[in-house]
Length: 174
Image (cartoon, rainbow, N blue to C red; front, side, top):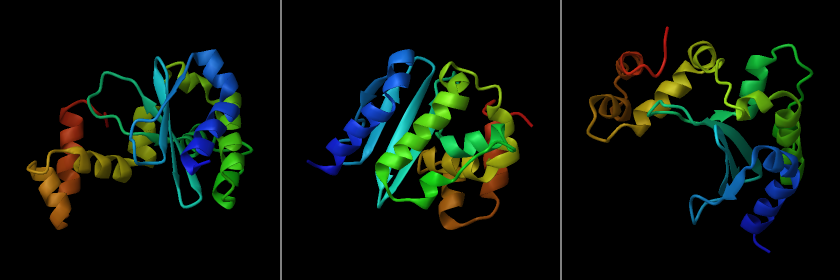
């Protein structure tokens, strides 16, 4: 059995309750990558697997044209800074334990995200992950876009330009 097939089956097992409750559909968006998506009505969950690390991110379905994924563990830490959070997914390379851990966090504390509650998102971006968000934005722009060009060559003004672009296009609000 391949890693992809094991990964797919493990997602189905550990996320079974959420799959049923939110009518999620498991798909493989890229043929040659260890990436799967649980597609939902208001939010997708993206899974990736690389060298022993399982990634799990929310991808909101909003009207914004640019919406990267947001790591489940980072969202949890942001929304529940004093919660009883354990970094288990980062301390073990056991894919099944990592998936079980993510499923438990979502099932117990983050169902609101799957229901479409993104009221926290602007604060998360602007207070916790502005650099990551702007980096993802710069990389998603066309290769001939001035911000992308500046980013690629290491021009430090790319970040201010990307922030202005995000604000002007109502991606974020400061």
